[in-house]
Image (tube, rainbow, N blue to C red; front, side, top):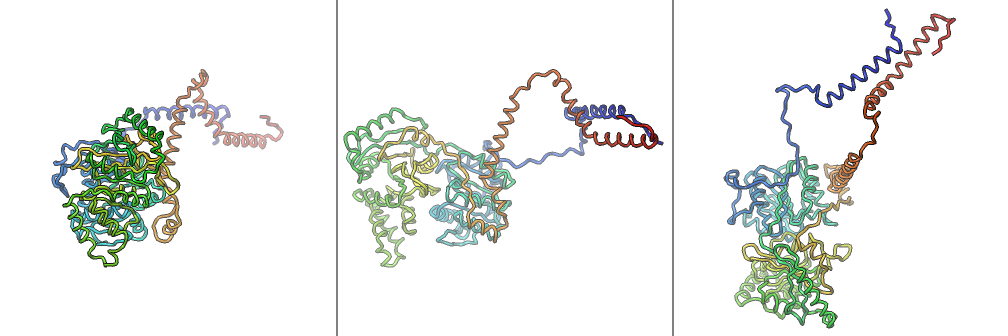
Length: 599
């Protein structure tokens, strides 16, 4: 038995089906035919990893952490308590706070937790000076047997529970060592990820660290904290808790100094006060004083001995010592310090204390080593309370200078900018020899706001000073007011990725690491920022598209959508209809050979 259906009936069935199918889709989209799941089918969705800006109260801190892994003699700040609460929950923490605000407390608590849990912690720093300082600090806190040190020069107690190292050392370990027993990695000065030459090392470390490791990220100058935290979330598939504080423990005042080696009186002008208000009147007065000196020909003479009257007649008289002077060249650092040999800034008691420490520190050297020019030179300067510090200074002498500066026995220290990278050695006053001579391995330029904040943040000793002072010396020109406004008001620059493939990285990935080159590239901060930029652009285009109003059309508003779905269904069935028509004509032709079928 065969069922005969005409073409008109087929078309009517198709159209009816199309309308029914489309109306069902509309009902499902509007929720009319949604089937509610039973109570046994309901599941609570798991919380996805995310970057969280922490602003929770710490009123119940003692109840939530009844027994701390480590105690301090001083009262903890709010941001420190917030970080400790999340460390107790084994969360990743990113702390952004001003220099000398107390970020080291967070690092110390993570180390204390690892000792309590019987696991290991690694503390990384960008420079050897900071690594050395943290080694001595942590050794005094946790004990010699629990703390180790690894730098390019020194290897001490490498199997300790907490090992302090430079970031490059940790990168090398990740390529060829198993770090399965590692619980915490503390990355200090994480803003170095934006360094043009070394920043790629920080990205390698963060990408290759095992997912079981918890991160403690510390930074003083980081404006795009949430963007960076979201990248960590993406590559680690874990939440990151961001804790930021804009509060300075010691208020900071910003000055410019227009004095010369012959003129010192009334040449110090406060430009920005502790409330970050820019003083236009004082800036105009400073500009006028500088221009008057130029017209008088006083600025045409090279200022060979500017620091001697500045230190003795300004800083010493105003009680602004000890002072840390930043210069951007090692040779200038030493030469400028030598111009102060005519100033004696230490008392008889302080000289005695310096002499005893020098003798004890240098007694292990041979007689020939003690006669080295640098040792003789620095010994003479230290007795007067003056010193210099840069990468060209002998390691032993650098440690001596750092120790005496911490004790307050060095009154004026000339140093390069690396001294500001996390080293906890604040002074009452920070002085900038110039802000226009920063060399970034490509060219000389003006320091940016992040660099200024990092260095000026060393001004003001917590618990010793009520105020800190930052002074810019006017050399060949007075700083433009727009530049002063940009970085003296404390606005850090966004940190950008400097990721690039190096030959050594490719070889290590090919022969030793468990990662593929493609994986490292896809997970880099640079790639994340590019993807984020594309998403932002796409979202903007979608918003523009939504803002476009459709042209009025009565026909389209009524049945255009129904027509679209009907036509789409008919078009999909067209081959079947054509096949049916061909078969029907063939059957007729076979049964009636004398009949011509015309369609």
